[in-house]
Image 1 (tube, rainbow, N blue to C red):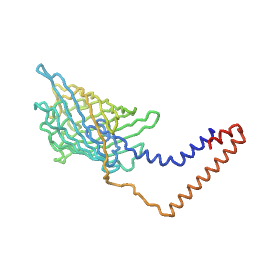
Image 2 (cartoon, rainbow, N blue to C red):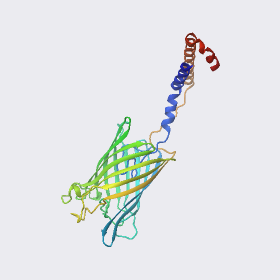
Image 3 (cartoon, one colour):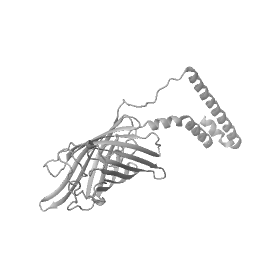
Length: 350
């Protein structure tokens, strides 16, 4: 009896496993996005893109405060909203607005800068190793720039490009390794290289899924590489620990903390470019993904089989069924020879 059951299960898997794999792969996977939009961790971007035709809307809240003097606190609260759209299977578009940002100048936090970007997953990438390019523009929509406790902002039209790498390490505990490096020009209107405000931007992070949580750690920074007045330790850098909770209905909830790695800039060496950065920040976020029917780019075509193809497939199915029946008959005969006492159970099964 056990032999027959194993045989029937094996045949079932041989016939239907390809279909099950197709159905499983078609299920939408909820993507995890950065605070600026685009698939990744919190600030570190993944070379992989979101599913084509899908929208992801996320919002993040960050908070920090410290005692600045005997009269009060230094506060830094910000709200960021990002939108990501999968234009094709290898190209995603992103946009981020900052509706609220403390600038230490206004009583109520005015809006911050706006960022738009695009990420391209290079065609020679593989499921285990992916490379990508990301370009972005920062629009000076904030009322105040280069605000305390935040990375440098020039108040001018800025932009940059980044190279992205993602490595899927497979094993008993699969994890992802991400690396980013790029160039950030804080005044693209000059079209010149080597300005004092030019920065090297980088990030390195690892992500470990422990369903329904995704744990991650990342190291990010923005470095003035052409400004002799600013040493490496004066730059904005931080270590971030966080986790993403994969909720129902394609939702994701983020929690985490930043640990500042810059030295205490009191007073700063050059207040035009650097200031005191936050020693720590806490953040939380919420993301939601939904799909649209309209998809640009290559879409698998639905082909109609000819009568000859249908007849050929039907004949192959009949042959497989005949072979299965023959093998089942042989196994029944072997059971009858070896275990006569099981004949009664076998007939009852049929």
